[in-house]
Image (cartoon, rainbow, N blue to C red; front, side, top):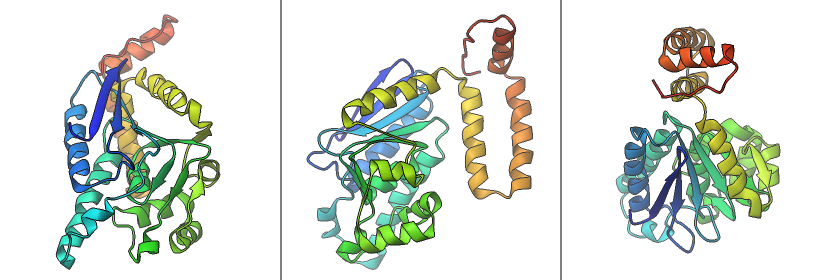
Length: 257
């Protein structure tokens, strides 16, 4: 890995963006992340992924210098689609992905964070989509995910003014789960990741599928899927272990089967 560092411990893979000074999301970084996700998907040692940035920022956005190498409309469109595919891979990933955001998550950095399932932020972090300041628009599905989280009015304000919000404000608007002092960020995010990692991978994967169904399917179809997955999880080894552990008043030992 050229731009990412990976450390796996206690079922949690901590993935660190290491491309100083801003951890800009170039095409090469996104390709490396996509490849890493493919590897971690089938790694039984990993049940949760924690993303964060090295240095001052989570990620200050896309690689603007790379933009200067793009001349044709088709190239720009393809760049956007490639970024969208990585964010979609994150959102559809069968294992929980948590973003620990400090410093700034701007432009592509926020689009990446919005593709994650949970966001823990430093109270003084800056989150925004400032692309209109460059005469551009977000291209990695930011217009759609930001609207989903904060509503049309606030999304319009954030994009049209290009002004970021703080980590505290991000929680108030539903863009982040929790805001903590920056010095406590990794500790808090790691504690959450470890707690989630103790749950059954079978049930976690099923709930991830259902959370995505809630965003894309009509209610009656999603609840039908819920019933089907309930049956599947119920007869799994983990399902049986969890019930038995409850009866025996002990902690369950989930194997992901």
